Image (cartoon, rainbow, N blue to C red; front, side, top):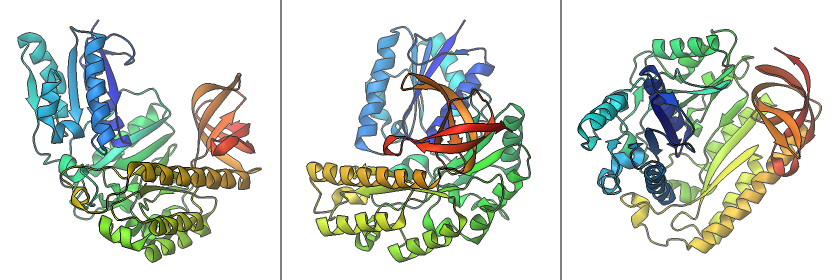
Length: 428
């Protein structure tokens, strides 16, 4: 029996890419095992969004080698795309960037035969269609787009992922249908810049592929992320559809116009406020966001404006990141870099605010009936629960055994916004 294990760093797009590659190995007769076990082949899917991501990517390559000195170590993804020489030096057997992953099993076979390091790092020039056939989930990510052309001042991703490439609509529809037939109850459409889906496909845009996918019965659709200027009338209208999840993730990054301009984010707080104001009519609606603190030149006054703006928006969940000093990005060379200690303090302040806002949102949902995709069994305070995700992105814990899609009465909040307890009403 030949075995393969994988470890994924970074975003949900990376997770989808990993699942697609594991599907290729499974088709070729490999058995997928947990990364904690000894395997014949290890796959490390790397990330380069922060300096810490680079460091963790290198650590996981070394860890894979330690697990099995005779195993084959394959390294792929964003870090290898931008830093392939560094990956070569730490002893990877196979190095693949953000293109050519469909050839990774062939590269493994070649290395097993010849014992020669295999390197395939090229510029991405087309959408790489790697449908996921290997999964053990009721809630699955589908990548419908790759690449980004925004060139935010702090980000290396456009350099590692390349230009925007959209997945063929018929391929998206086929995968949604196949996943539905396999028992999946929710798919999350994701991409590096998913709001630009269709830019390279005449007659298509994100709203159209969503509408087409919502024609498939028996499965609900969620969006992973949209920039503010992509939340248009067509997307907002979809919130009326019973199987389009009432949750939008709309990155903010800063609540200060001066910093937004330096970041090259192409919107201001007034525009962002107008979008959130329109969405308030669709409650219950989960609105989540990302914020970067400590961007070069961010003063204490600038940070306070961000804090106050975030508080005003009333997000239901907040993801907070300290600015990461990434070489070869415009922000790397900007003056007035914020000290690490100061960034850490600001991060903590916003994390505490985010926990409070999430708790407040959960409290307002007590007594409501929600549809929950049940994902796994877990233990909480010594008691067994079945846990899943509501359409507005609440983590819900259900004491009664259940699977698939469940209607649940939301009864009680858990500490620090970590989720809610619910009573099972029926399975759908």
